[in-house]
Amino acid sequence: MKDGTMIPCDQVVAKLWEYLDQELAPEASAQVQQHLEICRRCFPQYDFQRAYRVYLLQVQRESVPPALRHRIFEAILAEEATSKQSSDVPFEHGTGLRALIARIFGRR
Image (tube, rainbow, N blue to C red; front, side):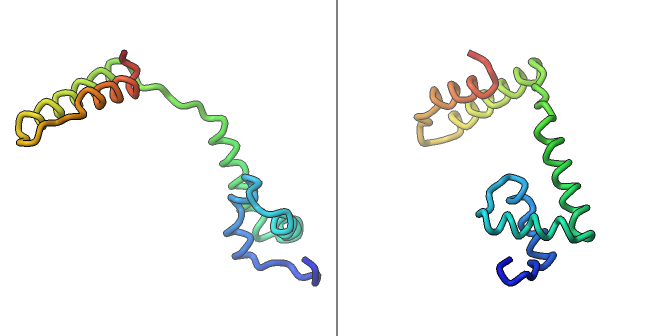
């Protein structure tokens, strides 16, 4: 900081995710970095969040098994058909909804 004082721990902890994502302004980033270089209390929190962020970036999304996708797709279509039958107002977006569901669940 300009006056040589560090920002408080609570402010550093509140800014850690933004710091890790490089979303802070350069001056704020420098303040957090300076604090982390000195503060033994905040550094473990930073180290944990950094490691957790790396882990999240490395974890691959598990795909939904095809049988489950099919069951979900069919359940949504059945719900749509039931809604159409019980409604006095015609459901005008059924075709669009089916296309959206098909796209989400990978069915063409």
